[in-house]
Length: 80
Image (cartoon, rainbow, N blue to C red):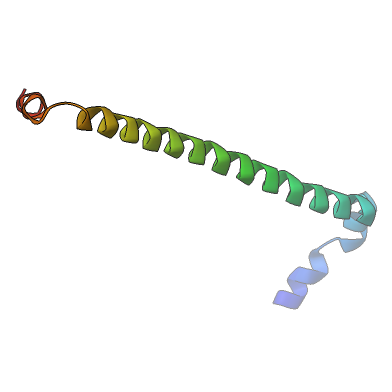
């Protein structure tokens, strides 16, 4: 049954209509695609690290400012 199905497929017509593949262009697209993906990942990672660094700096500044307050003032700020 599978052989009959394959015999019905017009392979010659498909080959005539298909565009020939330019191997050089395919290789160029693959190489450029790798660099594009690398740049994309590096930028997203740098942005994420920048946000994380911003949060870390803000937390350190809050802790620094909180440590400079007297203990009683810190207790009142927690309760309120």
